Length: 138
Image (cartoon, rainbow, N blue to C red):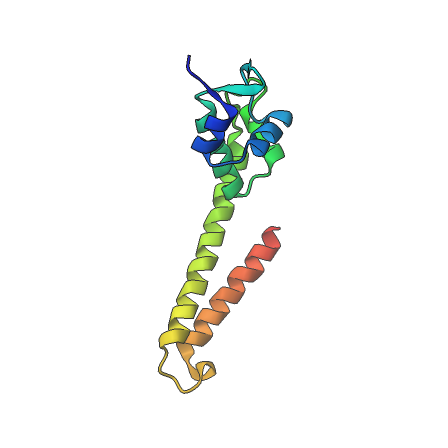
């Protein structure tokens, strides 16, 4: 098995070595040992770091991500939280599309005043409904 030292992992994963040390401290990753003073990691840790980053981008906390990796680091992903997060992302996507449509319409609307434009009013109402719905979910 090929091992990478902490500097190589940091470079490949695009994170500082301090992040790797912190992730190891909280149990997200595990080093395979040391070569001199430098931590050594299996090459698989780069994939694991990519998964951690995806989890963070999706909105999972580091504690939630730790629990998904399981004690052996192999992964024990509970499916229900993933479904909930996917549903939440779907709601965010709908809100963002509505906002995008509203901004595009405002930029291109020929009406003398946006408040006179029925399309603008409809889009604002739709965006407002999405906002109220999102607040109820929280």
